[in-house]
Length: 271
Image (cartoon, rainbow, N blue to C red):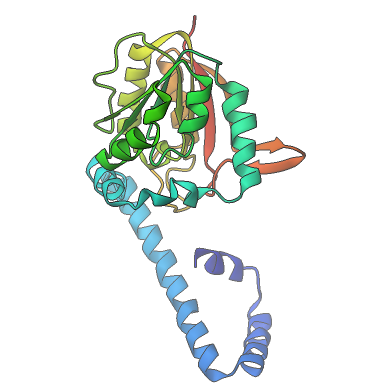
């Protein structure tokens, strides 16, 4: 509904009246009454969202992105679709795999996946690695992936706290992948994770993280992390930024990395 509120500002009052008459003429009063309710609700929804965002920034409340809420939500999620409910189309997913995952992930070595969910990217990661460790805040995700990838013989999964990598040995990982996860993790927890990356990464290890960019300002149940804050916290911990982008081009088609101006950031532990 937010788009209705934003877009109607571009139409003058006179044009709005003409459009209203045309809508009534073509659709009838009952349909128009339902539309008017939707129209008014969109304005209320937009104001409510602005108030929520204001309170969140002013008081530092977590919104929908606390560790407790993330754990509860993903424990209750139905993972039968394997996370593909967030895939807009196959061309987009193929582009993510070929341009982002294969383009930046090293071949071989030990790979850490934070938030494998239903295993949407895990199979591809396993094929490229010598071994994979998946850490998820949801025990149900760990159960799903443990069963799904048991036959590979080189994947392990464990429940994590949502802000650290307890149980992952020091200097044990050659690469990190996390997609559709850090978009829901607030900055304080991301900073704690970044400290852990320094601990578990081998020299030269590469990290690829999909995250939000506007602090939840566009909705989408996004965290309070901004693009600038993500780059800054990584740089402060000595990581080199390899790439950071909101869109990519594959097979002549330009795709967005996410629905809410999300970003993919690639970074490296100095050798």
